[in-house]
Length: 183
Image (cartoon, rainbow, N blue to C red):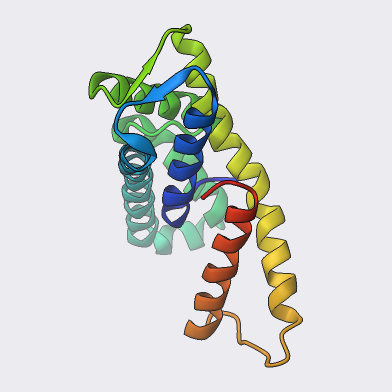
């Protein structure tokens, strides 16, 4: 699964909480400061990918007639163009490599800004950040399914996509994250 912008605050909180709970990392300015920085870095990386995807869509739209004439698969073409342009946008497409890069970037910034201190090898701290990202992604589908199930059992039926549905979903989603110690 790929991260999306709405996930950034949740992943950032998980990173900050996991660093605080590690026992060998000291958060010099608290969980909130670490979460804020992590969120900013995650959002910056995600926005680079969104910019890349917008550019790819523009290319496809500009060449729509030719694509139809050649009977090319638009989804496959999208991926091929994205793959080709990714280095120009500094976007890593392999999820494991991307999360590893993101973990290093977050760790470096937290250390440089003196938001964290540790006496263990840097890689051990980086792995906490990496694992927090991966754990969130693994739990996301499970939490989402649980929230959808709860909403479907409401007496009053909510229409998916409606403002009311989104508000209830968000509230319940955050409730589930709290239960799991991710907020």
